[in-house]
Image (cartoon, rainbow, N blue to C red; front, side, top):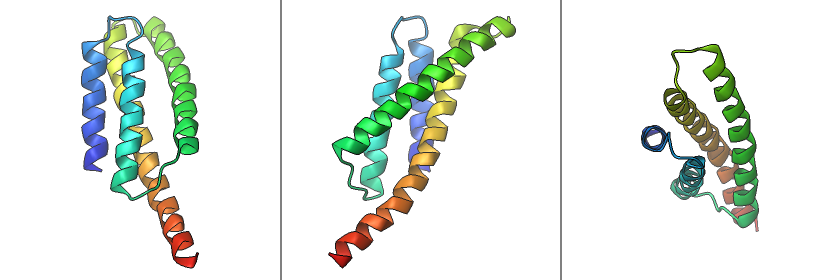
Length: 119
C-alpha cells in the first residue's frame, strides 16, 4: 500500500507540474504503466505483454472518461481551475488503479503459483 501512496503523490506532483503543458497526460500514462510493472514485481506476478497491453487499454479508456469529467467539473465549478482538477483526478485515478491492481495481483498471483506447483 505504501507503493500505491507513493505513486499517488508522484502522479499529483507530475499533474501539478505539467498542468499547463498540452499532452502532459502522456507522462501520467507512462507513470501508471511503470506502477503496474512495479506492483507486479513486488507481488511476484508474472506480467506478460498481453497483460500489459490490456492494462494500457484500460488506462486509456478510464483516463479519457475522467478527462471528460474534469472538463464538465471545470464548467460547473468556476473556482476549480483546470490545474487543480487535473491534480485531483490524476491522484484519485492512480490511487484507485493501484488498489485494484493490488487486489488483482494478490488474487491471480496465487493462481499462477498454484499452476506452477501443479505442472
